[in-house]
Image 1 (cartoon, rainbow, N blue to C red):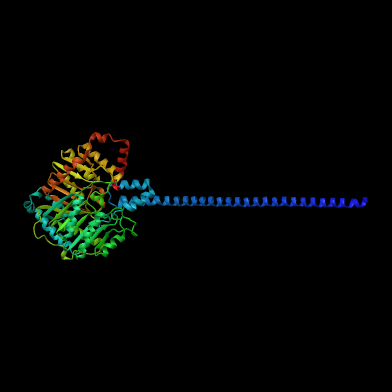
Image 2: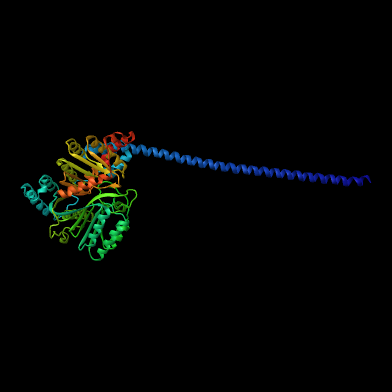
Length: 551
């Protein structure tokens, strides 16, 4: 009985031991699994952290390599830029006939801003060769013969006797004949426009009345409400068989694309561009722009002056407000001078000689008026600065008064000295320019030159009723010169310009009357006002004046 009762107890103990063994093995297995999991997680994290470290290290290596490459390129470029600047300095000093101020300004820019100065020089500093860009075969001899005849007339006093208004200006007439072949005519009528709406209303009316041809040349043409009116009139005349040509400047008209002009050509309008942009948009010639604004219709009517084609020129741009400009409508033989100027520009831009077609040159059937004038033009291809020289001669000839209106006043030394001499000689010098700067550096440079005149005793005014864009000079109520040229170095030397040199008391007197009427919208800058300007303004004036030869 004791044996029987001992076996079950022993078996129970064995089963309990096996259960405990299995539990222990399970716990050990679970512990090992958890340990393996932790090791796997640690390994994964380590791998991840290692990848991040390697990525950061790669980025750092890339930046170090980039910086080392940049330093090498910079050192290489800087070393060569020194030599490039030296070569440019030699060219500026010895091979380009720049005025001393302009040469020093470029040398300063090249040395202070080696890289940027070099790019600026490429875009705006290179001189155009003094060559005949607008030489047209077959017309030189005819023009020279006519010029020689008029020169003889001036020398023999015949022209002076026939036209008393030329008595005090025969030397200037002869100068324009001799230096630039500018013919004098005395059968002209002139209408003056100072408001863009009036000017373009008259132009559109003349376009509608055209029978043979319409030639337009503008520095700026914008595809807006104003040109839409003009285009409508042009397309109507093109449909009637009237020949229409438009010559535009690539820089001035950069806001409109090629498709704009292609659409015009599809409608039968001939289009040509002056100094086109590279690849359609890249303008490598910041200087040497065709700043002329000419319209010739049937050889009977012509326009020249300051108005371009855009809504701001009719007062619709709130940035400028009222746009005050001066434009001339001319009838008479002087139309031929503007026509010849247009044909020369067209020949250069389009490689098409229009001079051989006799339909363009129609002599006036009757005398349009009694106004004597010469059409004078200048550009970087000319040896002489004809418009500057006419301004200068008029200033020297003034006995009583000088009236000047210009949006930008950055004269060269000869003009500034002449105005100072006139002021200190008792001549009443009056200068008007806009109070609103559309080009800040040009505005501050203008104030610098104006300040000298104010301190010498000249009357200087800011036009406060919008923007003043009129360009011209009148003296003694006897003669005036108006057109596209500003009173600045850019117009004198770098841009292609055209002006009407008028010898007529009525027209000159009217220009001076308009000036005095504009004074109602002006503020006179007194000596006290100029002296009280802030140090900051004085600083901006001096910096801008230093750069004025290259502005």
